[in-house]
Amino acid sequence: MGDSKLAGQFFDAAIGLLQRVRDEEAGAVEAAGTLIADTVADGGRLFAFGAGHSSLAAQDLVYRAGGLALMNLLAVPGAVGVDVVPATLGSALERVDGLASAVLDCSPARAGDVLVIISLSGRNALPVEMAMHARALGLKVIGVTSVAYASETESRHASGTYLKDHCDVVLDSKIAIGDAELTLDSVPAPFAPASTVVTSALLQSVMATAAGTLADRGIEPPLLRSGNVDGGHEWNGRVFKEYGDRIFYRR
Image (cartoon, rainbow, N blue to C red; front, top):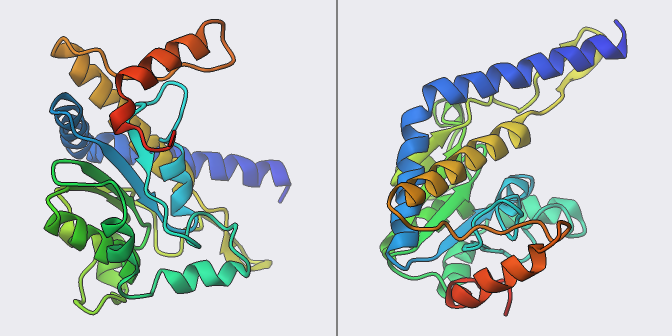
């Protein structure tokens, strides 16, 4: 089997998943986009969190050309991406009780804000505790996860629950257990993960919905422009000035 055939199979798998989330999650995307629009209109702030590779989709929403300027990254030290050494420490931190609550309590997040929590499995202590504590503080939680994990794996949180159990809106990425789309008889492990592609697309569809919903209400969505187009820096400077009290990555 040639490499090009495998490449095509991966694209087909990713496209199939994108079509599924487009069709099956349309209601949840609309609800999440409306919740974000409501929060922006009401003076609230927006935060996104993900651990390990789930952080990639969270970072994709923050300080992003074409994105909402109000989306802030809620960073847990050692769990943002795979920059911590050894990389296995990041996975270990996801199972530490109390870490999520400590991070939230030290963050600017407050009642009335929205927190997007991304966790493919939704089973580890960190995202479950993050969602539980956020709601206890009065935040609204949008969870992005593969719901299938909850029926096929055991929770690693003391409550026995999963991220999906503590959300105002759940977006199901439809990713299969193990996050690998391809197999070969000559390769002992499945390969080619698609969760980043699908999760990022799901969340960008939510942001698009939020921007359109705000516009429908006569509110200009606080969008950033690319700094690499003429006038982009000036545009962004105006947005930062107008919404500076709700943008925390500029401190």
